Image 1 (spheres, rainbow, N blue to C red):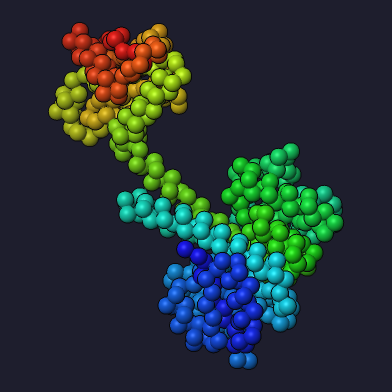
Image 2 (cartoon, rainbow, N blue to C red):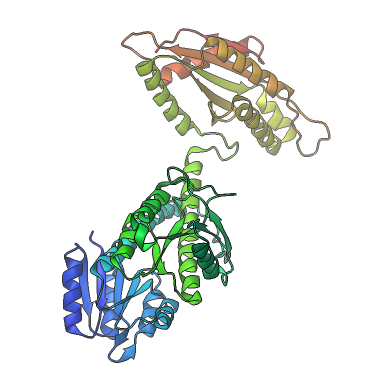
Length: 463
């Protein structure tokens, strides 16, 4: 769907000129000649972006802007104000009311359209995150709302001159944020301490604008700064250079001579947006982890493990190599529940799960199939490596002290393990997930039959 833009101006000629420019860029455009008409269209059409004249019928439009920004479905930074005389004080006044920026007429068309593209891009990115987070909410993975942290990590890309360093330090001196300088590497990576910055300031000089624009583009892609909010600092933020900065990766632009109040608003706006999106990413990550994780043990769940095993079988079939599959089962686990209670049984399962995961490391797939049964997949493991791993797991579990409520002395459990190893054979047929699980289960049966606390192999499979 096209992005919707509402133009609010009491001069019809202004609205027509703007509509032509905006519609030519493939936006869906609506027009309003008064505050009343604007609010009616806003409620009916839910525009994505508002372009508002700073004066309507001879009156300041700040009240209308505050109303638009207070709407329940409002996403920050989607109101752009247009003014005949945007002095620094006017800019601050309207930014305090909630606008992203105040552009001066006659408009720099490159900057104006770049502002529209920037707002559209951020809205789409946030809506994508919000969509997945809404799914997480529906599944019960939502987390409690976090208060807005007023103090953020603001960093400036070292501009290379004492004059520019002093200018940047003076810009942020009145803010409450943690500020410092950092240098960029060969590919735009930034050496930062203790995590990525929240907001980065990048000075772009008029005589070195191409180098500055390249730095912005590299920062937008670099691992250490790709989620940071980038603000370009220019001699004149109302030119086509500002538009180019927005197009290559800047989230906002401001002038070197910006008032302290404007600097504070711009940094806080970007910081708020960054923290909001970070929260959405955390919720998305939590939902992904919850979807593939067993809630009791923290291991992978059955669905994920079987899917991953299927992919590994395809890899062995295509590229060759080996793959070890183990099914492990705690011995006489019913006695633990009957003797010490189900809460003690849960504690035992968690302890065993920790031992399995910590012993094998990140290269293995360790999952809980259900009850006291576990599935372990070791990519690239041959029979010898699988034997060593299985024996080590068996001993680790047997020697683990498990402390349960109501007992001063630890309890102990043992584990039986059945193993099968798939190996590329050049045959057309390949084993399925069910075949490998069946072979490992058969080996587990022999392990149980031979007295438990043992490891047994089934060598019949080949990929």
